[in-house]
Amino acid sequence: MATSSTWEGTGLSQDDFMQRDECLVVDDKDQLLGTANKYDCHRFLAGSQPTGRLHRAFSVFLFSPDGRLLLQQRAASKVTFPGVWTNTCCSHPLAGQAPDEVDAPPAVASGAVPGIKAAAVRKLEHELGIPPEQVPASSFSFLTRLHYCAADTATHGPAAEWGEHEIDYVLFVRPQQLVTLQPNKDEVDATRYVTLTELRSMMADPALSWSPWFRILATQPHFLPAWWGDLEAALQPGGSRLADWRTIHKVL
Image (tube, rainbow, N blue to C red; front, side, top):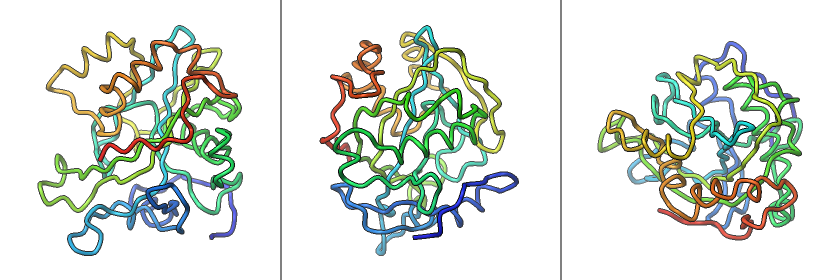
């Protein structure tokens, strides 16, 4: 693995991140196989890797003190799924980071996942300008994992050579006060806080597009609707009764 370093994204383009950032390649049981850069992981190539390379990811659902969910619209410059609406922040734990973002099986089995949470803090600051002290790693609740695969045919056509193939860790967090938002224009086009009713109205609007991972989580009743409907329980950092750390939900 790469020498540990503090991640720095200032002045770098989406192409730079594709080449530099080393994702964690895993098997379908979420066992670490090695690393590969974002470019390699997200390439869907007929014959050699038709569904990219399976890698770890995370999806943060950040709620306001009054229980509204913060959504983001991905920037038009993103390589995969540009311009779509999704949850607060979606990204990847990386190899070679300080603090370490690689979680071993015991950390996953216990629900602690310090590496995933460190990555979430890092990317909330990078994408949305949220100061780390407003979203400490200890405040996140890890709920479950989702294994999904989606080619970005909407952007790249029916033979799309780009897509997502991830084991996605779902994290909930509700800071005590409204967070400071300074979205990075290279990552985010817009943000919006919504209630569950408002979200359903948005998702019924044919003019709006949504990320495939968020659509899965938002429309299946045992995922986001159940967690949001019992938000106090879902937000328990030490282990929500709604959490399922052992199951990897396959929705391929």
